[in-house]
Image (cartoon, rainbow, N blue to C red; front, side):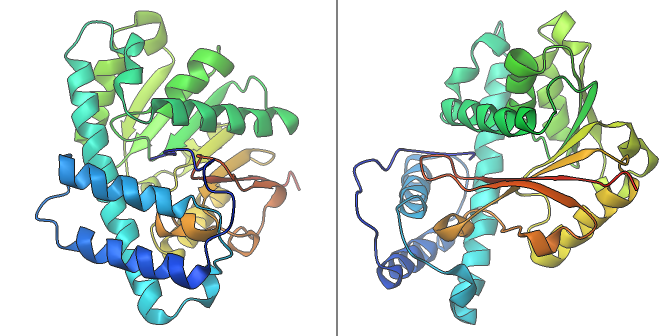
Length: 285
């Protein structure tokens, strides 16, 4: 769910208390679902959720009550599970048709992933990362659209290692990429908990950390610290975060969560893109 739906029709900000009330109401409806697998009801509820989260607002996530924070975390978990099930369903379908790489736009949010990848590549190139030799994507899932879009349109000679803890997700992703022999040569899928990957992290010029890897602050901080310890000096880490109401969908990462890094850029979208983009570099000395 890199992004969804344009909110250009909404010119003025929605008051924070109104937004929170509507988000809690949606949380309660989603929590009652018997299944999070794609269906008319599931799709409708999550479409409404994402539309709400992308409305302009003055919401201060840090000021929310403990009760609302608990519901925010729960709706993040539910949204993440629903996202994973949607990706798996579409990716499995794509893996069974001819030329899946030419039919990626069958995925409902494909255009939004393209926009996010374009944004991330612009930020990377502005900071000197143009054609890295080797890149890692942590938390690639069954539908590794960022790696595919980057490899196809931006980093056309780069080797991509995609890490995911779920072997089923990796199996489906491999089938999609295997449809193109040349593409397959520079797109690998590795089944690991990233906390078990150590010296290998030193191979990469740039590491992408998916938004849903490390759902709470403690997990995210621990994962970022582990990556920093083993990545190469001078290497880049791109972390996906969230800002404002978008933090009901994805965890927030701020500068204080990135000790030992040089902060290069923080970008918060105001259009249909959901994820904020944080780029840091591990100092050489």
